[in-house]
Amino acid sequence: MVHISKNEIETLIAAAAKAREHAYAPYSGHTVGAAVLDGDGAVHQGCNIEFVTLQQTVHAERAAIVNMASAGARQIRAVAVVGPYSGVPCAECRQAIWEFCCADPDVAIVSAPVGGAVEILRLGDIYPRPYGPETKNIDPRRF
Ligand SMILES: [Zn+2]
Image 1 (cartoon, helix red, strand yellow):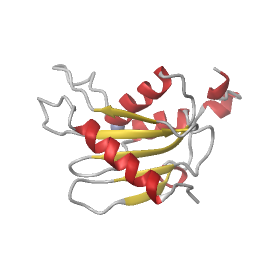
Image 2 (cartoon, rainbow, N blue to C red):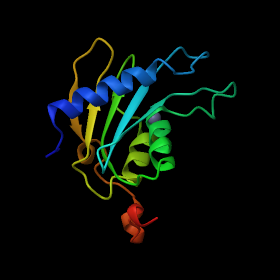
Image 3 (cartoon, helix red, strand yellow):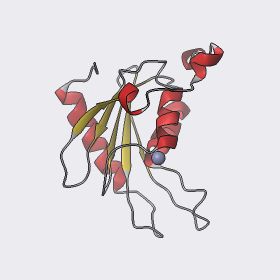
């Protein structure tokens, strides 16, 4: 059962939509924004950033996570994604979210596709057999 309020959902979607305005996607035109709610209630934003080689592309979710970690936070409570086709994180981003979810499968994933219906997903449902830092007795909050 995810634990996120209606107000937090709205705040995260607005932050992700704002971040999406800064997406750098000249090659695909696929612009995505993400917002992470950390363990202290702060919101961290990210947008996708493409590079000409394409392999170096940074997804919005991971940009938001890097911004969160760079600000010193180490726990994700929720992630919102605003994108053109889907607001569901890709497999690599699910792994990155798991790194900082502190082994909590109830982290909320707010999927907000542009022009589509908002869905509140449970991380454990979209990433059911994670390989995370807990398997090595690592708690990200200690680092
Ligand atoms: Zn991704």
